[in-house]
Image (cartoon, rainbow, N blue to C red; front, side, top):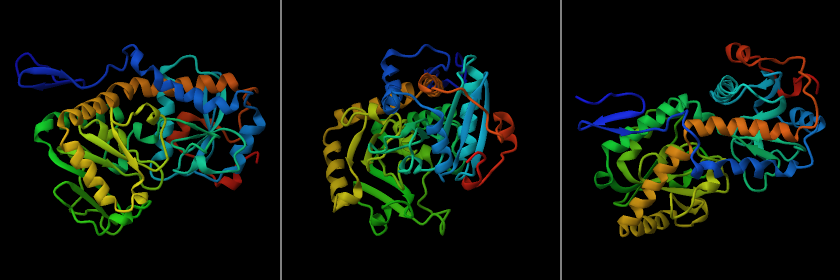
Length: 373
């Protein structure tokens, strides 16, 4: 099209260029600065300091997948890596590599990262463990941006920056007035409490479908993430703990209805019910969940102006607050804040290897065979 250049951050529509993403080198928006408050909240239990005994205790007591991260003299090392589910370990190490490549003043730190859903739950922790999600009672856990910000191969998504573009493009192709006026959900019946929906039949307002992904990996009801944007209302129904799809759904410009089971990621405290998403009780606690969802959708559909504002605010939140720049900045600020509480010098573990080598040739061990334990 004349006058238009199609790049990552621009999409040409009808001869006009529309911005789709935030420049990763742009200054931080003041309105997004509250995102980093979660770091202080998570580290508050360690105001008296983080000593080596705490870190060693977590490292040697946890059986969850993950690894120890040690930064010394600007170089990052990985030790005691326990194999994780799917591509999680790899993705988190790639996120760390990006931080190490971008910032020239990384502090010396020594910390433990858990990469499974329940890293925060281990009650034997006597020190901080970095986790992707937690509940309020998990006071030892310190949240970090989860593995899907790097990519989510198993869900056919690319890195977050490029996936933002894909989701925005899909949203632009299905503007509010043309979206299907139903609440839609697709997912596995084998996680959490979703089996309660196994016999649910779609109605004119609610279309919730679950199935056994192991037995039917190519189920005919499967809907890819970009195609979720065709629905006006989208249900985020966590499975075992949290649901990584929430941020993707917010990008659709649809009203996202979140089933709150108590688990949260680092950015959830900035989401506001009735402003940029809708929140319900955990569906398993609702009794007749189908009737509850139907009532909610009916309420939203009879208040179209308010519903559209919620949808637009959610999309703006996922675009601006969760910009790739902010995700990288979050990691950096987390490492800096942690280092300021650390009371000991970093002594590399005997099996510590440079981050790049760990990515190229991971050295897996069983949790009980971590060196120094």
